[in-house]
Image (cartoon, rainbow, N blue to C red; front, side, top):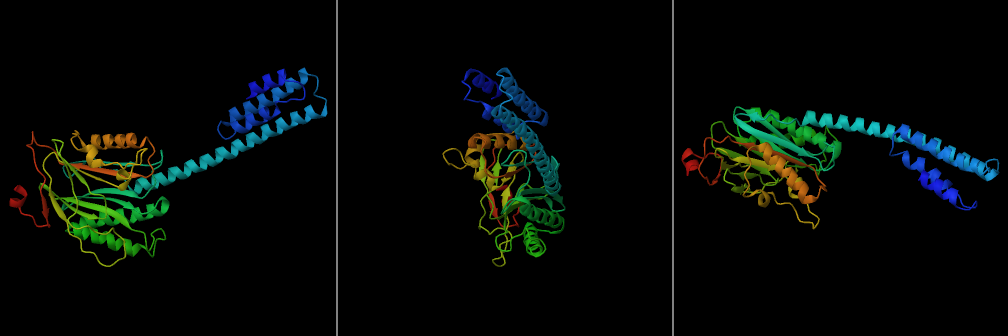
Amino acid sequence: MIVGGLVFDYLSPPPFTAVPMFVAAPLIAAPFFSLFSTVRIGIAAVLSILALRLSGSTLPAVVPSIELVTVITVAVLAVVINRVVQRGNEQLASARVIAETAMRAVLPIPAERVGGLHVAARYEAAQADEFVGGDLFAVAESPYGVRLVVGDVRGKGLEAVATVAVVIGAFREAAEQEDSLEGVAQRLERALTRERPRQGGIDPVEGFVTAVLAEIPPGAAEVRIVNRGHPEPLLLHLDGQLDVLAPTVPALPLGMDLGAWTDRADVWELAAGTTLLAYTDGLTEARDTQGDFYDPAARLRGRIFPAPEALLSALADDVRLHTGGRSTDDMALLAVARPAQGQPERRRTVKIVGRDASEEELSR
């Protein structure tokens, strides 16, 4: 703009002036450039108008003098604007770091091996460089096996983080103490009800949480699942087959004050080499340019992944490809794989209703 202003002012007749270009240059630089660059551009604008007026011997005149004072004033204001913008950016970055640190303390990434199982988890934020939302996951090794939860809190921001902290804290305690997965779900329900009067972030009417809880008992080739209004997990096999683990009886989300709810776990076979994938609705509600939702079952069926981390990486890349990088909701992904033993034969998933499934039923 400064170079264009110099050319325009030099070649145009005296009634025409390029002062607006010299004024605009430092103002445009102020919010986008560094302080040093903004100062350089301001000085360049002032020297340019000064050189033009000196070369034309018009500087002592009133109008050229006012033009010079105008450019100097705007250049100084651009420096002030630059400092205000930079200070705001620093404060925002500091607040973001604090929020992300708090969120990571509440929602730590689980270890790669838990109770002899391979585990991978990932939080994909809709906005780059952000890690604050209402999606959650946790994995705990308990006397009753490896237990996990994946959930989605209604709402966003710090209010959702407060609810995430309640759910994760209650889950870690209940996973160690409750002898059934249904008992863990009921503990989460009671925790949300108990914390509503104490935490204003939990909406007394609509502060619900969709969640899927799973339990893999030690030494058993099964997984027990309680689904509270959450997207159905997937079971991926070594040969590329895939099963959608739909609950026998649909259930309400956690924290919906609509009366008592009796949970009942469904039992599924978990063969060696099988991977359990749980996710939040940020995955299934991802849309492409035509508005079509992402279908994880259709996109993953027939594909084979060497490890849970490879599965999550491929899934995240595929979602970005599907949406063109325009995701509007965060998503949490959790994959748990039972290590393969040798070259397992092709297995068929069998759903067994109820908790007390016998070894004979599992074999069938």
